[in-house]
Image (cartoon, rainbow, N blue to C red; front, side, top):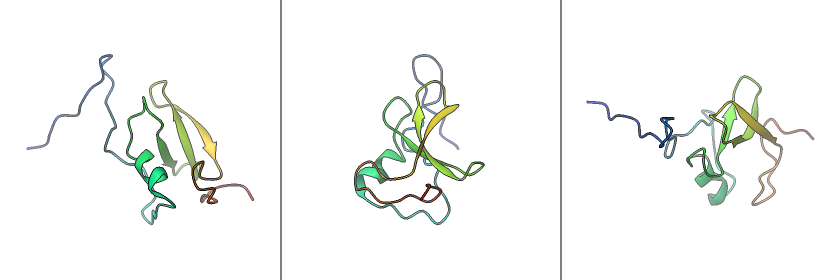
Length: 83
């Protein structure tokens, strides 16, 4: 039986532990990897396949993100980043 999703106090789903990464995802560092499975109310990074970019999720319900070209922790150039 599938487990029910955890919810925030406002009724939105908590994404803690869920990842949105490309199939070939290989983390550049542990700090970046941890943020791919964080809650949207924390610092969360996701891969958005429609725009082919990594984003920092803006905690507004999951519809906004800030484009990432480099890992903010180790400086690695991320797929989809601009040269």
